[in-house]
Image 1: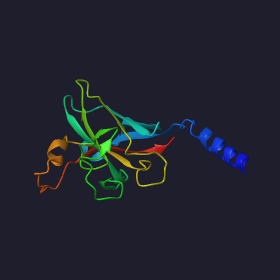
Image 2 (image 1 turned 90 degrees about the vertical axis):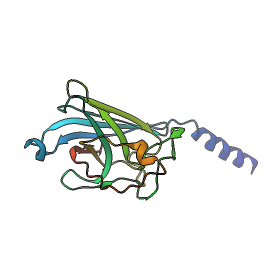
Image 3 (image 1 turned 60 degrees about the horizontal axis):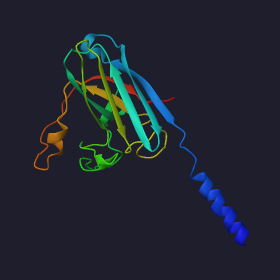
Image 4 (image 1 turned 120 degrees about the vertical axis):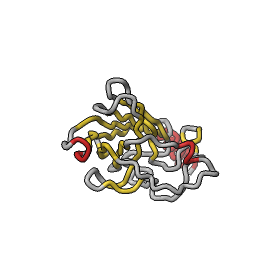
Length: 182
C-alpha cells in the first residue's frame, strides 16, 4: 500500500514539470468594401498561447498616416459583425488583473489602440492571461473577429467610475478578420 501511494505521488509530481505546448492561431485582416469599393487583404493577426498567457500581434497597412485605430474582438464574422466579445459575461474588466496589472479596459475583448505610422502601417501587440486559444471555454479567442475601428477608444474614460455611458459607440469598422486555428 505504501509503495502504491509513493508511485502515485511520483507520477503526479512528474506531470508538474511538463511545459505547456504552445498553441497558435491567426488569420488575415481585410478592408471593408464600403470604404474603398474593394475587399483586400491589408494585414494579419497572429496569436500564441504559452506559459499561461496569450500574446496577440495585429498588423495593418494602407491606413491614413498618423491615425489611431481602436481594435476590439467581436462575435460574428466580417459579413455580419456582432457585438463586442466579453467572454459571455456582462462583467466590467477595468480592474480585473491581467499579467499582474489592471486590464484597464471595460471589456475582455478590448484589445487597445493602434498608432498608424507615417507610411500607413500599424502594429499592436498585447499579452494577457485573460484569454486562451482552442480551450473551448468562454476565454477562447478562436473564431472571434478582430475588428479595426475608424476612431480610437478612450479606455481611461470608459473605466472612470463617474462616467455615464450614454453614447451609442457608433465607431465604424474599417477592417476585420477571423482568428482561425493554425
